[in-house]
Image 1: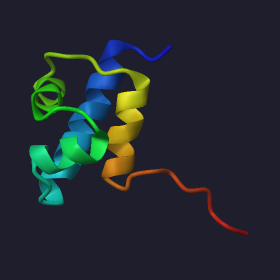
Image 2 (image 1 turned 45 degrees about the vertical axis):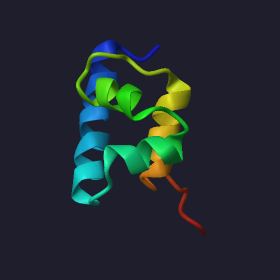
Image 3 (image 1 turned 90 degrees about the vertical axis):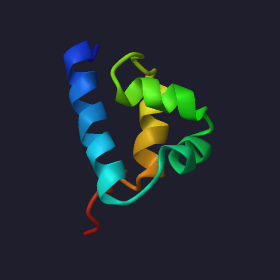
Length: 70
């Protein structure tokens, strides 16, 4: 099981990527299928998201790990 500390570290990385890519909370929340308020709570560490929501966050930011092709 992933610890709360690890989840928070990953949220911080994803939040930084959202800012660097110039994506608003509103735009990202829409892509994730959650409310802007829920995303704000996640980014402010007021809400620990489910694994599914973390996957949606990563996918919405195009941070999906892709296996190298041989």
